[in-house]
Amino acid sequence: MNKNGPLVVIEDDEDDRELFTSVFNELGYSNEIVFFEDGQAALAYIQGEDIFPFLILSDINLPKLNGFELRKMVHTNEGLSSKCIPYLFFSTSVEKEAVYDAYTMSVQGFFKKPSSYEHLKSTIRIIIEYWRECYSPNHFEDL
Image 1 (tube, rainbow, N blue to C red):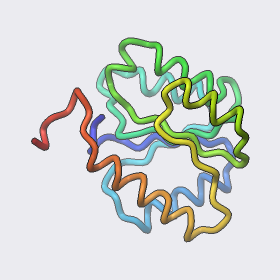
Image 2: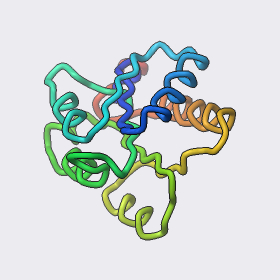
Image 3: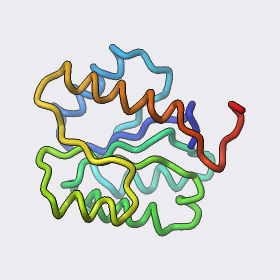
């Protein structure tokens, strides 16, 4: 996990992308925010040799490659899994089976998209601060 790396947001809904943009701007984190509308484009990006994202926030229902398919590819690909990128789901609905499936793929979080802007901002702040404090096997520059 690269704490200074880009924050990858995979979201096909334009209104939700605008909300995320507003929240990230207001919170003022220095990480670049990189948006993708589908899982295939996100996968191509994170496979880049010099790309070490801070974390991935992914919707589940995505065109071309859904969030579960993308997570499985990231988790089972040796090159991608060695990047230790925290992978979190943001979904409009939360169903027991989907949450169970996500955690069997070692997802690091499953969140329901908050209905209010302030709740979204609070959730994003908590997530970012948590992962800023967390260490991963491949980045020990803060020690």
